Amino acid sequence: MSYTEVVSILEELGLPLAYDHFAEGEAPDPPFICYLYPESIPFGADDTVYFQFHELDIEVYTDIKDPALEKRVESLLTAHELFFQKNETWIDEEKLYEVLYTVTVDVEAEEDTDHE
Image (cartoon, rainbow, N blue to C red; front, side, top):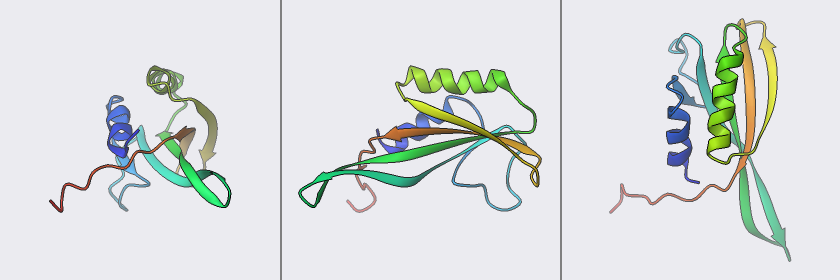
């Protein structure tokens, strides 16, 4: 799955979307989504990395508990055959709920078309 495909899938929710974070002072009103790839998960043998999976974190921010939105996110991930784990936390200083969906993906390299 390419980075572009991940963005395309998340855009189906129709919510503001940013990689990692919105610029300071430019965060939209909730709900909104931030996503990032915080770590790789290597598979290897014989002192060689043969393959890398990547952790994809999808952070859904709301100012109220929103089970209907969570169901939409989970249905979307399931429809795209993305197995996920879910965690939730209240961020007191931001007065926001963060529902974190962690997905393991095979990130495909995208062609660099800027240098042709």
